[in-house]
Image (cartoon, rainbow, N blue to C red; front, side):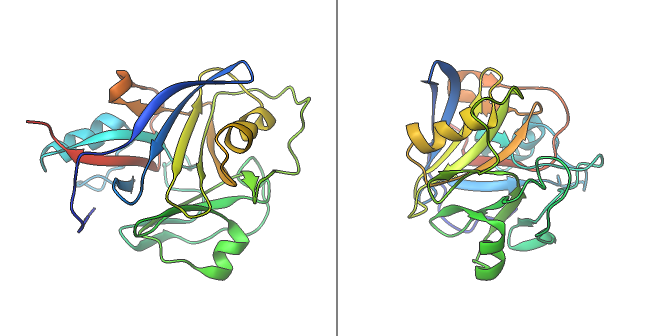
Length: 238
């Protein structure tokens, strides 16, 4: 997991957030300044699975995990269900077709971390453009597509789960990760990105297994072993 640019103190800011009477935690990242990465396999080849495992490996390099969140759906062996790139190496191809479960509820999308920007891109648009991503993870469904909620989201849905996702600005310089602190519908979750945070693109990362690592809030969720994890790396303090 190599990062060739300068590593400064991270600017990631995590805050408690309330929208439409529902509680969330939002973490905003600036990809121009923050060392934003994806993590899957540890040095031994075993999948990290937990924030603490990543932090332990980073500590050996004089670094720490300033923020972390689960970053896409995974199989029983914790391999990514969809497209996955780490350090420029594609480990799983793009899955463009519809399928079962939330992942296959098209349109789905890809979260792409490039140089000095990061973007949520609808999968077919991503496949056509093939942007240069240092890291990428595919998940679904899209929550917000070009400022519109996913067409299958129903305002009166009764399906409620703890959910997490990521939204990006048009210029790719603003990235906001959100986890609900109570069970919410897809419609409610999509609206926080579109109507409150003002982000034109947003992607669902997962539900029920949703987890957050936010040391500045004294929070590091523990539970089921995870597949892909997104995080911000910064130097250890003195």
